[in-house]
Image (cartoon, rainbow, N blue to C red; front, side, top):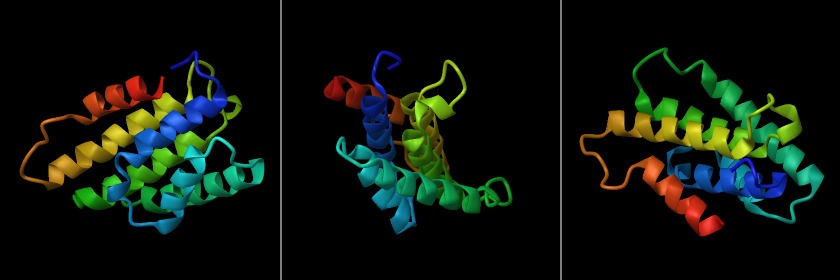
Length: 137
């Protein structure tokens, strides 16, 4: 993933976020993921989307660890995945990239969903992400 340019990393990160978007309760985060997937999104649209996703991730952060409402925590991780996808690589620590950070946060969201549910899925989020990468390259 490190070989991808910033736009392709953003789009890939958005696809990872989209795979768990059903766990998100906030329409602004859903729109932010749609913007992140758009290769022609303007800088202003991307900044607005990042602000919305980051704001919701910050708002829901306090719910993490406070109780065992796994779906509330999953909601936070979806917003964190969208935030990661939309964060310009220049604003991330060296040796980090938006797609990888979004993948990690999406997996956390999926783990929370599995904690809430009784049954596991046949395809794990990691397997789904490998398929997404294969389809995207």
